[in-house]
Length: 477
Image 1 (cartoon, rainbow, N blue to C red):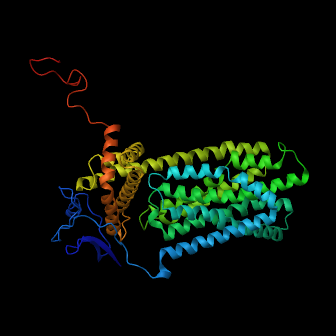
Image 2: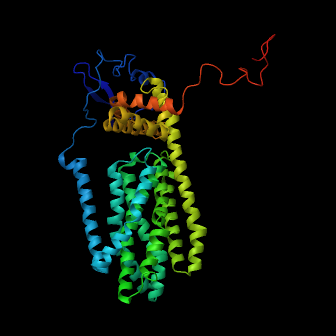
């Protein structure tokens, strides 16, 4: 296996990537290679020590990987994947409409979509520090809404029939056992498969625990959306057949429990699986948690799901007891953990990027600005005021690339360096270099605004701290 190292061509003034033996060692913060990659004192582009001439700057377009055949390109594979998910979506919606009727389907769709923007907004806000690629976001939600629900619909029905024939159970026992044992196993496995696929094929995007929480939450949000269409639509069909009033109807009760009371239920369950895979991705090879963490997360998700489904089969008092004593505390714990993981990402930025500032790629104050969401927002406002919307977009991209750079280097220092570390680092530095003219002044001004430098004279009198004595023969002023 080989990787690519950054080396500008002295003849054409263009950049290229030459193969070097793998694995690539993790660069030290003050190594000679790292210093030589920094910008010159005159603001010119970085020069390679072995080059005879120094290029004027990086080109606007650089190919970081060799071109692939058409049938092996990412665009073709991505298109085929999303086409398959769209077909699954059409099938599941057709099955649900055929099962509950057109009118019930439309009512269920209108009511089930209400919590989706709120949940999506919460997860995307949590992911603002280091946004996941849009392909991962769309895939996660689409898998949950289309593929996972399609598998769960048929697998749950098959599992219920298997229980009834194997144990000669009555219909009520079959429903209770299916909700307690079959549904958690089937649904958490169907949702967790999306996280497994992302872990296997796009592991480089699991850069922090936040990624596991966000991606699993998106999968579960899509799953809950389609499932709510079925449950609310079925309740509406029953009410229509019985002629029930609105307040005392099963539709109102189902909407209150599933949409207003527990919209976080499925995201809470599946977040355990996402956290497990994120822990595995952040664990160096050879450690036992690299294999056990996904299994523990998946098992915890099934246990929580089974406890919740069991409580729904009990009396209203037992249901509320489980909701207050189990669901709400676990939900609060996961929310706290998500904010803690987000703060850890910002702390990693603050402690990792000073190495690049020392090498000359960043200004000394940039690590502070990039590690503060307030400074990022203020920098985008400053850039928008001076350069318009393209300037704000440049600052946003600059902060994202810098965040991925910090997480990449932090992972390498923990023993998770990959053979393409040098190529990915050079690519991220290349993107930073092209946006520095707009982003760096805006970030510097935001830093100055939020944390101005200390005055050149003492801010309080007397000038000597209270625990020190006055100069010999003198007194405090």
